[in-house]
Length: 182
Picture (cartoon, rainbow, N blue to C red):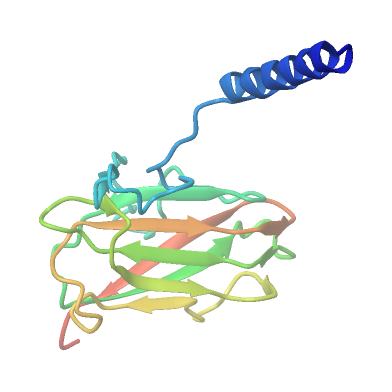
C-alpha cells in the first residue's frame, strides 16, 4: 500500500515538470520568414515588408548607405524607370585599398506582386559568386539583370546584396544601366 502514494507523488512531480516546461517555453513564430510552420492554415500566403528606397548615385552608380563589411546585408526597394534596360552590377573596393577581396558575394532581386513587395515572392535574380573574389573588378560585372528578359514585370523590386567575408577595407555595390536597344 505504501507504493501507491509514492507512485502518485512521483507522477505528480513529473506532471508538474511537464506543465512548467510547456508554459515556460517562449511562443513560436509560426508564419514569419523563419517560422516553424509557415504552411500552417492560419498563416497568410504573403507578408508585406517595409524597406527604404535604393538610392544609386546618378554619377558614380554607387548604392548609397551600403558599405559592405563582413556578413553585411542590405535590402532596399529598387525602382526601375525602364524595365527593358539592362543593369550591370559589380562590387568595387576603395581605390586606396587595392588588395581588397570579398567572399561569397550574393545578390537577389525579388519581383513585386500586385504592386507590393511581399515575402516570399518570385526571385528574378538569385546569384552567388563562390569563393574569394579579388577586387576591384575592372570592367568585370558580377551580375547582369534585365527585368523584361527575366519576365519580372514592372518595378519596384526588392534588391538584397550581401557578402560573407571581406579582406581589407570596405566595398560598394556599383550599378550601370544600358538602355534597351543600346
